[in-house]
Amino acid sequence: MRLVLLGPPGAGKGTQAKQLAEKLDLPHVSTGDLLRENVSQDTNLGREAKNFMNRGLLVPDDIVARMLRQRFNHPDVRRGFILDGYPRNLKQAEGLDAILREQDSLLELVVYLDSSDPVIIQRITGRLVCSNCGLSFHRTNMPPKSEGLCDKCGSRLYQRTDDTEETARKRLEVYKKEACALIEYYQEKGILKCLTADAEAAPVLNNILELVKEYDDSHKK
Ligand code: AMP
Image 1: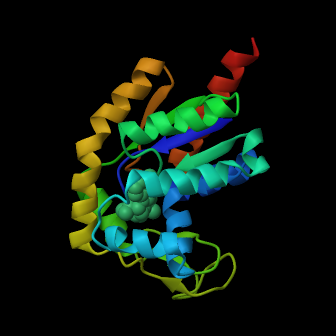
Image 2: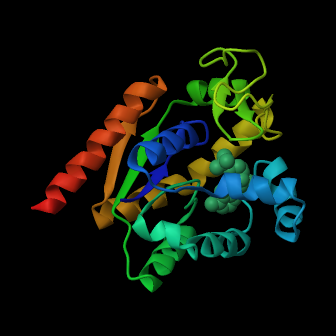
């Protein structure tokens, strides 16, 4: 399955993508995670990206495209992937198609997770992320069993520097400018499915798995 999760920041793409990847035994590719890795390792790419990320702006397309192309050169994605955080605009969507075409493959499913603005802001500003495995928690919606520590690996949880209310509102504004064009692009290709993602994570995951099953069943015939 080659699947993209689309939707506003805070819709739960990262959380869902991680769980989906585990359930379907596929690699999870997140451009946000790849960028944060570069920032924390202080690579050239990370130094270029950091300023944009801290202001809630998109990192320039050519930087992200280079990084994604490198990731897609790894053979693990040939079996399929769960991609989140990319594409963010039409140019990136066309870039992704080009990368896949070079590998004689095609995107199969795009799941759009929709969420309302108040839910998004509440989720983003309460989000805590594991410094080791990247698992996400929430101060009130999904608190860890031990305060400040990851349930899965026990490492320290932190708040992302771009998860302040001000930056979250900026990210939402940036997202909305590009969202319609992206939605239309995938609608025209006939691979877009929309889900409401205001609910808790578990029922949303079940709904996505149902869409994957429908896709698989209709392509087996
Ligand atoms: P995310 O983890 O997806 O919320 O992304 C965090 C930040 O990384 C975004 O606010 C952007 O600054 C940057 N970023 C992630 N993915 C992309 C992308 N596809 N294009 C440009 N910037 C991105």
